[in-house]
Image (cartoon, rainbow, N blue to C red; front, side):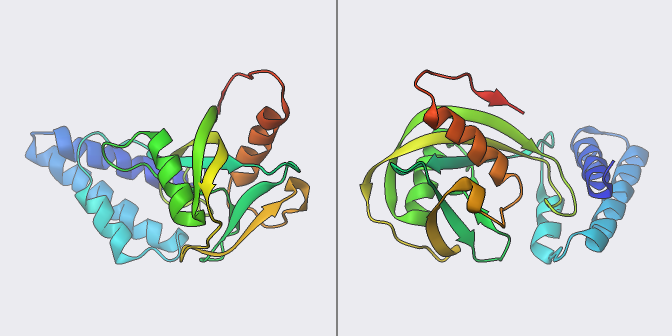
Length: 202
């Protein structure tokens, strides 16, 4: 098991235990597990900053994966719209975290508008993909809900979150943001099909 995935599981057990235990000794043990996981995350996740530590400390309830939503937008040539992330982590589909009281479909529409300036309509669910915690992926397991979208308005406009926007032939992308190549190829298969394909659960 990847060490970051192990630490993620330990901190999840500790945080969930702290939320539900009533015993003082158990609370001490869970707090120690949480401290150890945060301490060792710092060795494998760079930068593991104060904001991340605070988020660990403030999480309540049963600890679950983070949920994100992604949009696959193709032009008539079959090229996909990608954003080069400003943090240097590669080319990605327009995407973002699902906010409180927001449906993934609403997240997709909002994020595409914020990151590209385009208005889109969701055509189909491509799939639900799991990205486990790792040194490359970060300290959380996350679930990405990927949608096939079509442009209905707006003008292509780069946001502060990216350094470039471009329609790419999938095979030509040399630096993908983690897992986004998987999302893109699955979406293209659906885009090319003349029949409704079942959504993917990965």
